[in-house]
Length: 120
Image (cartoon, rainbow, N blue to C red; front, side):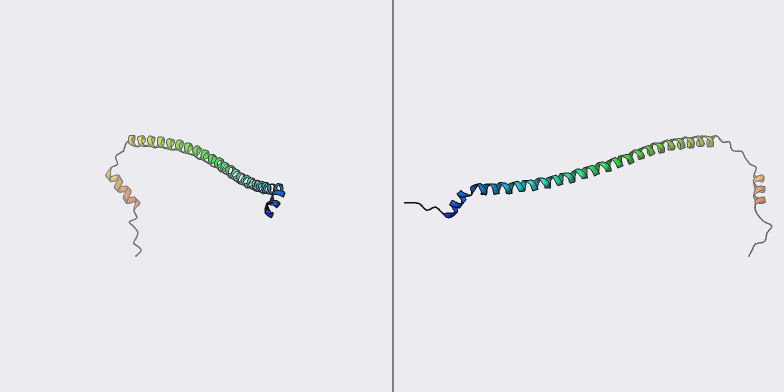
């Protein structure tokens, strides 16, 4: 007695090489597209890293300028503080000359305008 094999099993056995080749081709295509995607992502992240490095360089240059300005301002402040201290010591050493009250009264009277009538 002969056993009857289903038709699909016969065709599958006959074309098994083609089926395996198709599955491998599909997997290969998927691998290629996935690698292209990852390459694009890597390029994008590399570009972002380069941009960030450029920004860091720019900011570092600005911080160096600010540091230089800060040093010069500190030097200016030290000079001004020294002059202030000198002026304070000079102010303390100034001798006050007493002025007679009569002379001060005469100066005040000379500087005021008494002879004019008011404009009312």
